[in-house]
Image 1 (cartoon, rainbow, N blue to C red):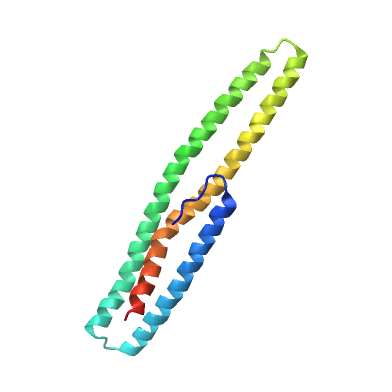
Image 2: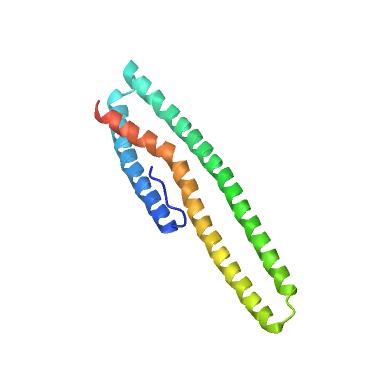
Length: 160
């Protein structure tokens, strides 16, 4: 899966939608193939069919476990990144507020207020963009194992 640029939530969500679409098409192909195989096998499937039917369940469990693990790992990393950003913003704001409180002149105080507000607004926008992008990244990491299983099965079953 390609790397998503920082601070571009639209591109991150669009890439997720594309991968989801690919996975859905592959899943439909796999379901069609396996349903036909189940119907053809009847009540007494042969060894090859039984092996394939057992594989169906195990693949779902493995993909779901890998997906949950990937999402959890990404969430932990994002939690640390966002915590760091919030702490930086807090320290920056506290320093600016302290400088504002220590201004002796009213004219300088107005300039400091404008600078404090500008910094707070810019930092808040950056943090909001990061949050939107982070949610898409968690979803992409969670989708990756399921996408790989579905597309891999579709390729494998085309050969049968």
